[in-house]
Length: 465
Image (cartoon, rainbow, N blue to C red; front, side, top):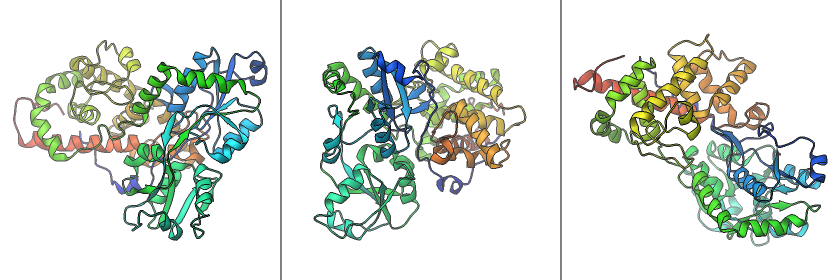
C-alpha cells in the first residue's frame, strides 16, 4: 500500500488561524452564574478560545490561561466556570456586564486599561513585535512604521501602542479589524507582499512554524506584562491574586506551562531527508521486528506504522513533547492507559500501544469510507483527535464536500482554524492544517522507506505489504 503525496500548495493557502466559542465542555462548570456566584463558590472566568489561552485538545480542555485559571480556582476553593468571547472588546464587555469575575486571556496591562480596571500581578513578560513577509525590505527603525501598510486588532494593546507612537511618528497609519483574530491576521500577512502586523512575542513564537514566510523585524514596545483583569464588582479578588501568584508553586506552574505551550514549538518537525535516510539504516533495525509484529496483529501496513513512528518520535523511545506525550509512538497518559501501556518509555509497549490505538481509530471511521482513505482518516484522528475529525466531517457535509475522500477532507480540515467555521462546531478550534501535514509527511516517509525496500534485501526489510 502506498499513501500518495499531496500537492503541498493545496495546504499552504489555508493555514491554522484561530478559535472561538467552545461550548462549555468542562463538566461541572455550572450554568446559573448569578445564583452560584451569590454563594461565593464559583470563579467566573472569560477567556478566548485560542491556542495561547484555551482550546479542546487530546486530553480535554487545555491552554496556558485555562490551566492557570483552574489552578487559581482550586487554590481558592472555587468551582471554575468558563466562558469565551471573540475579541478583546468582547472580553471586556462580558466583564462590564458583570457576567465574569476575571478576564484571563493574555491581556496586556497598559496605562489606559489601568485607568478603568484593576489587574492582578503581571505573570508573563512579552514585547510587541513588527511582523512582515520575509521578502519585504523593512528597516529595524521605528520610523519605518510610517511607510508600512499595517493591520492590527481593533481596541487591542497593539492599536493603543500605535496611537502612542503617532506622537513621535505622525504618519503612522493602520487598519484596525474586529473580524479577525491575531492568528488570522498573521495568515493574511503571510499571504501578502507588503502587509505587516504587530503582535505579542509569545504569539509569534507559538505560530512561527506555521508561517515560515514571516519574520520579526523589531520590537515596537518596551517589555510589557500580561495580567488578569478584574471586575469592579469583585475587588477582593485582587488581593487573592497577589497572594496566589506569589506562591512558589504558582511560579513553578507558570514556568512549566510556558515550557509546555511556548518552549519548543518546533519539536519533531519535518527534518532533512538525508537524516531520515541515515536513521533508516541506524535506528530502524532496532525496532523493525516489533513494528512488523504489531502491524500484522492490527492489520496495519508495517511501513505506514514505521513512517508514523518516525513522524512522532524520530524512532526515539525516550522522546517527549512539550505537551507531555511520550515514547516511540508519542502516547498521552490517558491513551497509554486505555491501550494497556504501563511504561511509555518502553519501546515495545509503546509500539504495540500505538498500533492498537490506531486500529481502534480505524474502526471508528464511518464504514462508507474505504481504504486507503480510511487509514488516512485514522492517522488524522491520531494527530488531532476524533472529536475534531467528526467536526470536520460534519463541516464537509455542510459545505457540500464528499467527506468520504481524503483529498476533500484535506481541504476542509484547515477550516477548523477559522473563526467563522469553528465557532459553530462542537469541539471548537483546532489547528486543522496539522493533521493534513501529518498525513502528508507520513506519506513521504512511507514512500522513501518503500524505495529502500525495493532496492535492499536486508533481513529487516521483509515485505509485508
